[in-house]
Image 1 (cartoon, rainbow over the protein chains, first blue to last red):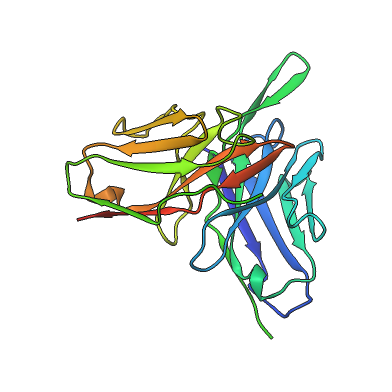
Image 2 (spheres, rainbow over the protein chains, first blue to last red; image 1 turned 90 degrees about the vertical axis):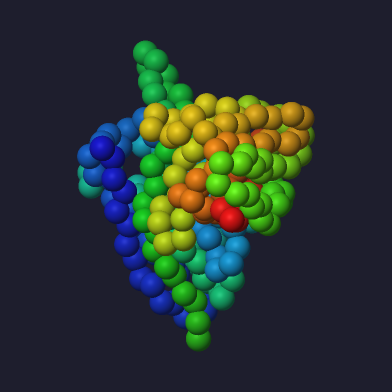
Length: 126
Length: 110
């Protein structure tokens, strides 16, 4: 059974860079998109972006200028970097898996997140 | 990309049925049959309840069902139980490889 374990700094000052990592245990790293989603206090979920096993990325246009999602296939980990943070970036950050499959030499992906991490609370305050 | 619109709260008594709406646009909900629903108990990881508008993952109760008409998707919970009390979020694939979530609905079991 696939599990996602995430970690990273929980308290940042404005203008610093948020860095979180998510490790994938108990399953393959290939053939999936690996996502980051956040939930500000009292608000709904917000999709941040995703990366697949070959490094292809998609980002939320509202965050694209500040976000980088990367992966370390040797460790089955992927990471989120969000620079120039402000108080508006205070949120619980979740990593998640978007499932997919392979037909012959072609990868395909489904359009939902089926496995989620437990979340990491990040606060931005001076 | 604006969030999908959901009612802030919906309530019902045990055994009743409730429906949560999720309204998007012709570029997300209306354009694709890729609406999913997530149950979120505070402090826990969100749980996938419905995918591709109306499909249930293995292990999810058949009391949960989904549908879509035009730009609006819906999640129905029948035979409401105390354990269903949670926040529910819809999500839709949108154009240009983007996902958008709903504003969230708090379900209260009276």
